[in-house]
Amino acid sequence: MIVHPTGKFDNRARAYAHIEAHPSAAAMGAEIRGVQLACLSDAQFAEIRNALFRHRMIYFRDQHITHADQEAFSLRFGPFAEDAYTKGVEGHPNVQPVIKEADVKTGMVFGSGWHTDSPFLPRPPAISMLYGADIPPFGGDTIWANTVLAYAMLSETMQRMLAPLRVHMSMARVLESAQAYARIDDSSLGRLAALRGTMALPEEVMRKVQGTTHPLVRTHPVTGERALYCDGTYAVGIEGLTEPESEALLNYLVAHITQPAFTCRLRWQPKTFALWDNRICIHQAFNDYDGYRRELYRTTVAGEIPE
Ligand code: SIN
Image (cartoon, rainbow, N blue to C red):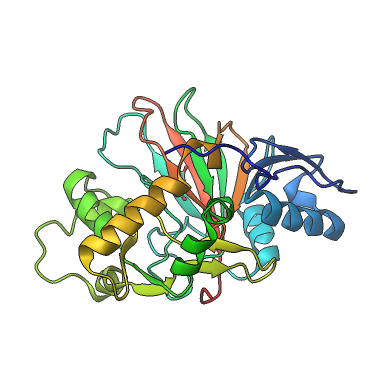
């Protein structure tokens, strides 16, 4: 399914006074230049926040930051979110390592599959950030899709039909895939894989598998923009519809959101720092860099109950 660009595509940069924004694709994404995140002024931060909401995902090259700097930058957006998967690094419980060693071969990496972060929680993280420490020479990119643009490109009739619906978000598929494909180790997926064959899931995992429902079309609390809130990983049903009905609708919506015209892709480099707003885009990581190490550090910002 292909749609052709219309007047609804608008990823042009605003004229900022304290940063430079360079759009990465027609649909979304921008590189921000002219700043070091470790020593930001309030005026720069205000423009970065504005650019994040405008471009959905923004990134910065050549950032010299420590875990403490990442925590401080993340906290400017708000308190840390509940960590649904990973354990933090020593001394920095909210800085979560996302690491795959060169000699590890696994059928599944953290972030595989199109998703918005942890929507099975009642208050999913609003914003996620990753800092690249060790990056493979090729592969290991991340891709995002703009869910505001995808919503805007639906017919008014479809938008009206979706407006009252609620989507059931659950960790069930990730648990199933981790048990089928991931290596058992101390990583987030490795710990889920270790539950293979367990009769009674720990209560913490059970809660995430049961998940929760959220509006299928959500409104951004700051900009008021409306976005599709569904993905190919956690959206498992639509309240009030039969299984075949929700499956057909969710499959259509995920294919619609993730068509290439609505995406942008980031080629990581060491010291690249990226952040995205989970309320207005979805993303996925690739498992395509066997033989190379990939090491990133993640923080997440608490979100609101989606409305
Ligand atoms: C994630 O889904 O947060 C991880 C993305 C990545 O590792 O590229």
